[in-house]
Image 1: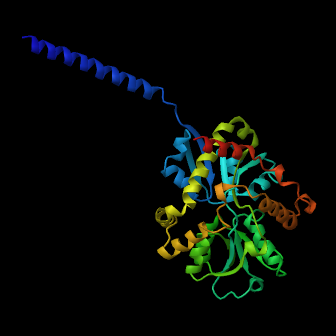
Image 2 (image 1 turned 90 degrees about the vertical axis):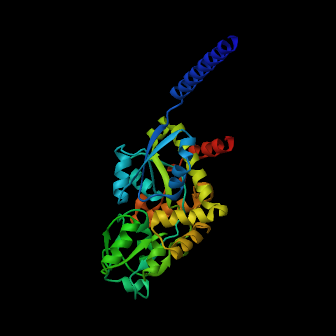
Image 3 (image 1 turned 30 degrees about the horizontal axis):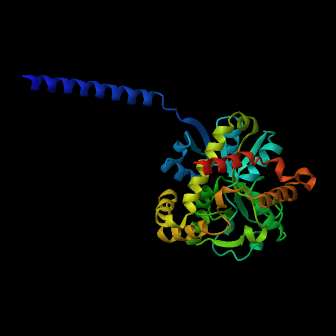
Length: 337
């Protein structure tokens, strides 16, 4: 009769242990830090962001990243200016335009991409000079890649509004679609993967911006300066996760999953994906660790000064628009992990 009593005692002890363990687990879950939300706006899904989401890198740094894509840089700048978005990804010149034209105090906090843009034109276009009297399409007429287009055409003796018409259409993928549907849209500046797709659709490349303009700080991250100061830790953690995502993207060991990702994300054929991957592995598109190209940014300011007459043609120093402290802290945070 003693054995059954002993079994009952052991069962009772086991039940107490289970209940206690459940209580401890529940308490741990209750006190687990909640993810902090950051609202990000972009013109298209950036691969490092997609990777950071899919691989849990944002969560690793305690963040819940809410991504919104918008159809134009005008819409993107408005989202950031009104506080609907906390951080924006777009060509660095958009941040400069916000400061100088819209009088919104934003600051660049990270680089990301250089310019691998090309001036793409309708089939049968032989030279840049053939665009005389034609309509070319842009995102916004006075920022970023529209200035690249104006510079290339100006070097061939064509002035905007006099020798050709500029029509705002929207972000790069939207412009490619517009050129396919409207043959009267003679040309546009396109970057990968849209430039890769354009060639497979029969459009022709008239010039590469790298050859004409040189280094150019393209896609970057920027925030309102006051918001960044108040949320510096969130910005730093976001940049750390982004850099880790970009490292994964550029690691040759991940070639096959990256090819699968670009095909899925950008709806590319096998050949288009391979051509895009070659650009990813090149030296002009993705900057190592999403670094900010200071020399390339000086070219951004120089181009704005020349084409738009900003600052009387004499741009200020690049450091006036870029705060490297967030990025430097992000790299240290990665190294400490």
